[in-house]
Length: 139
Image (cartoon, rainbow, N blue to C red):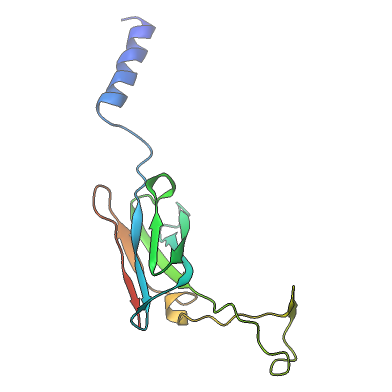
C-alpha cells in the first residue's frame, strides 16, 4: 500500500467513526434567589480535575444562563460558583474608610450567600450525549 493510500485510509477512519478531540458540551439552566429568577449575575464552572484546569463562565440574565457547545465544557466534574453583586455604591458617610474606586467609594455587596460562590461546594457532572441542564435554587 502506498503512503498516500495509507494516509487516506487513516483519514477516512477518523471521519467515518467520528473520532474527534472536541467533545465539548453545551450547558444551560436557571438560577433563582429567594424563589425569584436572578435578574443578573455570573456562573462559573471550574474543573475538579486539577490536570485539565478547564474553566468556563457565563452571564445570568433574567434567571437563565447558556453556554453553547463551541465554548462549552468537556465531560467531567465541575465546581460551580454563582455571583451577583448589587452594583450599588455605598454612602461615603456610612463607609468613610472604603477604598476609592473609579467614581468614589465603590464596593458592591454580594447578594448570593458565600456558600454558593467563594465557599461553594456545589458540584455537577457534564456527560457527553446527555442533557446538561442544571438549575440552581438559592434560598
